[in-house]
Image (cartoon, rainbow, N blue to C red; front, side, top):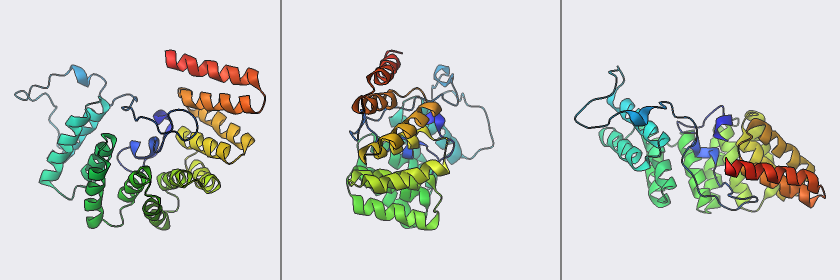
Length: 266
């Protein structure tokens, strides 16, 4: 689904891409996987990284910018620990570096250390209390920790400043879904899809929320739109299959189940 996104709340699209995602169908948490999108440097893994040899092209970029670029490249190649270390190097030299602080927090959260991730974000927010990217990131983590009032407060604060920020709408929708308020979640997720109509992830979660709120027709339309935008996600086909099974259309359901199996086997 990442390939379908066209805008970001911060330097890292994963801040919202699979927030509170489901591994299966209807609100079960998923294990987060490394980014499967094409790396910016597809042959980077073949470059020697002996510390005694400088294999990087000379550029005019600053030291922190170079370290952040290397960290982003490490994330792309699934080397999360290396990326964390590189962001720490940036912050050792410049504790106020916004991008490094935000991305470090997100990587720590992905590694399972949510409390440490929150500490990093809290440090950054004390210095930049009105920075939307930081508040969205903290709201997402607080939501996954089921600290819903705090998460909602951060996200509504962002939306007062930037009502058209899709990442904040999307994340608030997921927080409201976690609180067991599918109708309110639908309202936020629908706005997120209107702001970013090419975001397959938002359409998927809108479909899931509509399904949970009992709007079968709306759920089907949102999920089919998600498939149009990104046909590589098996959970979208699985949920469509279950939805069609429930409304008595087993032949169409079987076609979606078959496609989900094909994706798993690819």
